[in-house]
Structure formats: structure tokens, C-alpha cells
Image (cartoon, rainbow, N blue to C red; front, side, top):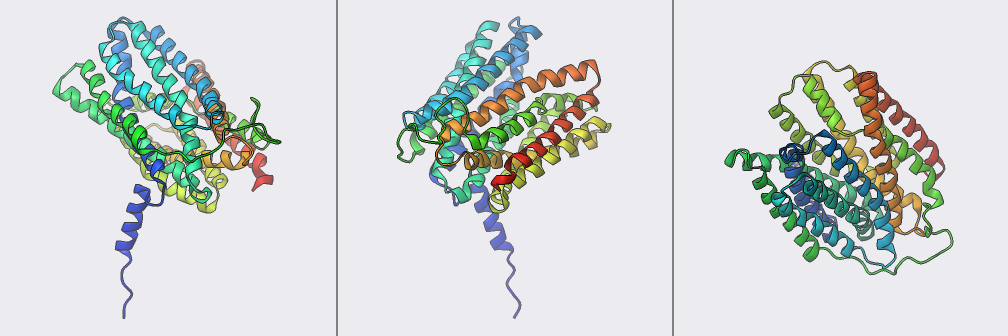
Length: 404
């Protein structure tokens, strides 16, 4: 008798993987929230430069807006996790962050001047800073340690899927109402509001005591001892991780049209979603450290590829590989830092320290990358990013060798 074909079972397992069948309801609810919120965000973000210019804001205003937004995001990501440790509650921070972001959508549709747009953009980033580390801590605390990388990756995957859907929704609105950017901003209110309501009604957090001072705990502003050397590696990597806008600029130089760039960007996020959940499961099985080192190696090779690419087909392949890097590392990084910090450290403070270190590096990365691009050559900027990724890989391997 021949063995039954396992195809249906495999398909069922794949469906379960992407719908988070084994994950707590709170993790799935936060994933749905991120999908809705990122769809709303990506409906708005690509149109902001043109909208700002239409209200009289030029390149200086655009640069000031993004610098203020990124600065506020970096500082609050580091602090909010620690703040959420102290009262022993995370959900209020997560709910407030998503609610504040949702409130900026209709206000953006009503903005009448460039300073108003800048202010609303900064408020939106403040909201993201308030919710990010407490949300990640909530995911860590509601998920068994054996599934933690998968939980983080599942959440990040839905975030990326929302980022793929958002520009397509904006394009549909603009097809129905050409040139009506305010209509897009108003329409973005709906998914943002739905995301906030999902947090309010469908997330629960486990009961726990507020973090108090304990020997070996993370009570000061310094991260716990087991995390300090790895954070240096994370900072070093993020220092070479410039804005993805430079990759789009490189693609445009290779002949991609505006429509082609939109499709490339949307497809890029779809691949990130497809890669995230399976990679999280692999990280739980084989170790987050290994997945991160593989992902960072892929990143270095991708940046070397961008330095040499001269055809649009090569650019498309590099974007696919770059999406795999995201899938391999995002969940694994968060799971690793929680494990390295140990149970004595506040989970919010631990993840806040991680987000602060990576955010600080990313904030400087785009400035450095842009300077090398302009003053030397684009290929030199990409090679520098690859070199920093390689150095970070060595640093992380050494920093975590004793904790394997």
C-alpha cells in the first residue's frame, strides 16, 4: 500500500504558520493592529513630500521634519519601555501610542501649512516611540520562550504586509480622485482607527508586578551587563543600515519608473511578510544568534551587490535578497536581547535599550551614507555599509560566544 501524499497536511501547516495558530490571542491582535496601522502609515508617508511642497515647504522643511521625527522616535523608543516597567502595565502605553497615531490622520487631511504638517508628522513618530518597546515587551511576556522569535517575526511580518497594502490603497483613492491627497489622508483614518480599536478590545496582558530594584537587575539607565556588548554590535550594524530610500534612488538610476518603483516597493514588503514567520520558527529551533549572523551576512552581500549592479533585473533580485535579511533578523534580534538580558532585567527596559541603540545608529547612518554617496560615489557608500555589517557580525559572534 502506498503512503498517502502529505501535500494537504503541509499546506495546512503552512496556513497555520502564517495565521499564528499556536500564538496567544494578544500576539495575533497586535499583529493585526500593526497590519492596519502600517497600511494607514504607508498610505500617507510616500505622499508627504509632495504635500509639504504644495504647502510651501521645500527640501529644508522636509529635512527638518524627518530629523525631528526620527530624533523623537529614537529617544522615546528607549525611554517608553522602561516607563512601562515601573507601573507594571504595558497596554495603556500601547493603546495610547496607536490612538495618538490614528488621531493624526484626519488632522493631516485638514493641515493648512507646512509647520502643521511637520508638527503632525513629529506627533505620529512620538506615538510610535511610546508604543514600540512596551508592545514588544507585551509580546515577549505573553509568549512562551520556545516560541518567542516566531511571535516577534509573525508580528513583524504582518507589519510588512500592511506596508505592502498601504500604497496600493492610496493608489486606488488617487485613481478615483486624481490629485486629491487630502482624500488619501482622510481615508487612512479608517485602518488606523480599526487598529487602535483592536488593541483596546482584543489584547490582554498577564498580571505582573512593577519592576523594582533587584541585584543584577536593569534599574539604572545602563542596560544589564549581559546585553551591553551585544548592543554595541547592534549599534555598529545599524550604523551601516541607511534609509531604504537610498535603495529606491539606486533603482531609479537603473531605469525604474515611478510606477515600477511603487510595484517594487510593494513586492519588497510582500516578500518580507512571506519570509518572517518561517524564519521566526527557524530561529526558535536553531537559535536566534545563528539566524541573525546569516541575515547580516546576506545584508553585506546585498549591499556589495548594489555597489556593482548596473541592470534593473539585478536590482529586483537584490531587493528579494534584502527582504530575506529582514525576515531572518527582525524577530530573532528581539528574542535574543530578551534572552541575553536575563529574567532580572525589566523586559520593557531591555527592549527599549535595544531600540535606542539601533535607532541611534540608524539616525546617523543615513547622514553618513548620504555624505559618502555625494562626496565619493554611491558604490563607496554601499561598500561602507557592507563593511560595517561584516564588522558587526564579528562583534556579535564574539559578544555572545560565551552565552551560546
